[in-house]
Length: 296
Image (tube, rainbow, N blue to C red; front, side):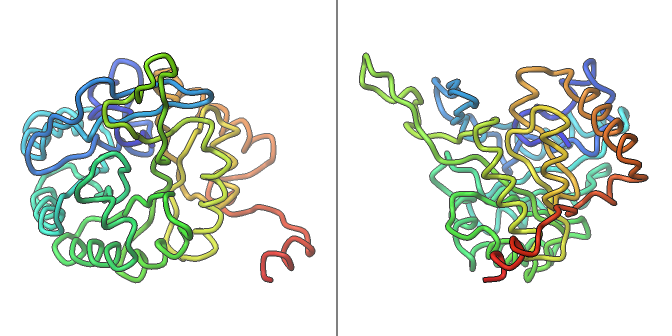
């Protein structure tokens, strides 16, 4: 799946990849209204990663439905719409609007963006808030609801359980890690927002650990992401327990990465005589000693 914020609205990449071959296109985050986002500088490269503080710039839900969704339908894309809210009511209204739009396959609730001061992250860092926003959205939509969890908490598995208890159909994780960078010559933050979200290969081992913990905590599917740059990276998440994966930052490095990922996964399945990718999910092999350590 193409991760939110790293693939535009999907149509921008139609010349680089057959969108119908992807598990899904996850849209840039949508509010009810258009949003400017933060002023420059908004992106900084870091060792093995990237910092961003875009501020959820977007065209708003009504323009998305009018301008992007028809073309995505024509291209055969599976469309997961990432929705953002400053209030609980905004999430609910977005869910209502998108439930009536032809071609929307699921909703991903962005309750975890670390670089805006209002809304989502407030819900995502509170167990009660996570439960409330998921349950409120579930009441107004027939679409699958997938809250996107923040890694900026002590125990991410407890948030996965809160989401499941509220009726979530799956959970996706992780969003970016709160981080910052400083220009030592000017002694100024490199980002206009001072802090931003860290993504890329630097976060992958932590993201895999969190996916593993959530898979053990909940029964709903877990969608994993964080620093996937090749097929081996994707397979790590799947073996840890991810039923699907999203790829984000690597798409900026190589917009043609998608066929390489799919070919690499198919080659692995053939080499290990595994009939279907679902047979690989959560198959991490632990020794009895490791199992005893985990249970204690």
